Image (cartoon, rainbow, N blue to C red; front, side, top):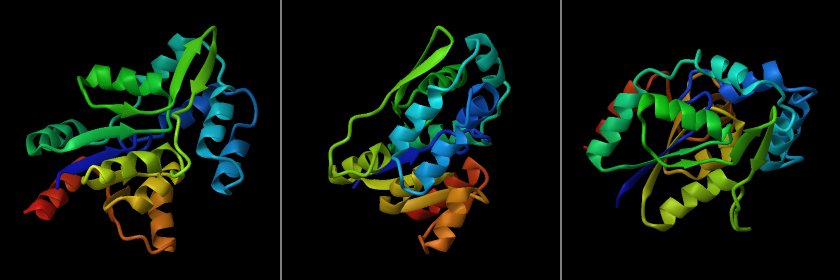
Length: 211
């Protein structure tokens, strides 16, 4: 059995939720209402982000200037190296803005697959194309986990927020960012998990897991 590591981006790889920060500073209108509706189960994550990202308006250079000021969680780059040395399949699965993820990974020299809705910036606006899913799956994060498990892989999932809920529920081993919303959700619903602040902590625990 091989090991697949699935990692969320916003608030997990990045210290802060970069997509949310962009919404705070550049969205025109009440983007938070879609987040609330998604959290209540009234709309899907896909419907939420399509509506939210369509509200972003501004200059691309101004958005990317803010993006470049954001920090990556400690130990991420060495964690990716560790996973590759161990022969793990590593994938970033995110509901965030794909052009932001691609930019950060290029800057860091990180080359791993990214599964995310495709967000394109043109004429001061963002358009988003969601990932097709089959009816058996509850969104693309669930689909990403189950497709790996169907290959016989043992899936380790790292996340921080409500969009990771379905992925984390179906993973074989779970890491959640300490004191984020997913951490509280796992406590409330008695979902077994480990909490972390740095990727060094995740690496150390995985080393113990595979001994």
